[in-house]
Length: 335
Ligand code: EPU
Image (tube, rainbow, N blue to C red; front, side, top):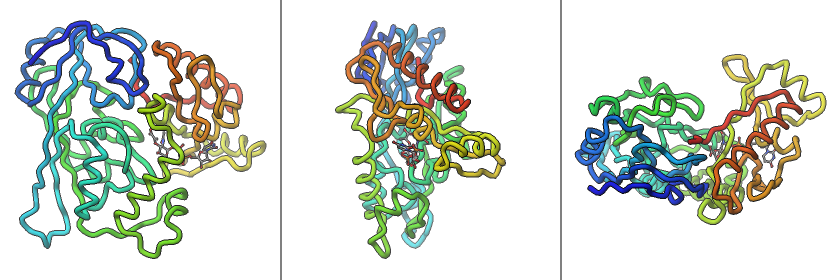
């Protein structure tokens, strides 16, 4: 395996920010991955999949690993009668190609997560979610290498410590995911969960799994920018949790504030709404702006320096804080 020095990371983050990796490698097997870790014990390490939820503000002084470990196996395919199906997928498979594979075979559980950019290995890191579904609901096990000692570790669903766009993998940065085992179902019944998607499917009596995938793709393509055309990293901020009192206070001026009461007693509200009402829908400062139809997405019109994104991020955070007294927390990882 080759090690490259001072390698540009521009094509390894969907925001297209420019930064150099001191060392860069692409292991094609678990063996190569182990070797790269063992040979660089004292270096800082960063795993980058397709780089769809990350950008750089400076060079990375260490080893950047871009795994190219592909492959998939159905674990429980002997018994076609079995309602449950387990599939182990290696980390570098493309997420949406895997979703398409499952939908074609009628394996249910991933269809709402259609068209999310990135790799299979990145999905558990930030517990990707859309249209009322989260990947944690179908993850059985995550297999990884502990980068501190090179040993193999396996995490059950609970051990992944999943939260809203969060997991042990995101919090510690210590594990390199090599495969994910999914637990899917052979029977599909559409359960309405999300306004936008229900609306798209309202004329269909019993939508099939393929109908749902197609509807998700249509909604996403209408609303979200394609990162290959206009660099971005999806939702930039997390949707914030606020107290009921805070929500009630904001509703005096903005009765249409989206507010979903959680089991914890907190209220989940919409970052897109707050950014929109703070005057940042379709705003632009220099080469950075928010997307006109979904202000939660920050887009890059041509900047190479990730610090420009950070400046714009802070401008939005400050204005939302001044207007609503709510702190927006980035969902994207900034290096
Ligand atoms: N809204 C506005 N103005 C706008 C657009 C939206 O006020 O211009 C408000 C509306 O009230 C709307 C609400 O924002 O009802 C929610 O918008 P949307 O349905 O687009 O969802 P979101 O909460 O902004 C989340 C995820 C997305 C996921 C969608 C669909 C997060 C951080 N984002 O966005 O995930 O695709 O739901 O399920 O939870 C991602 O994480 O990168 C991502 C794209």
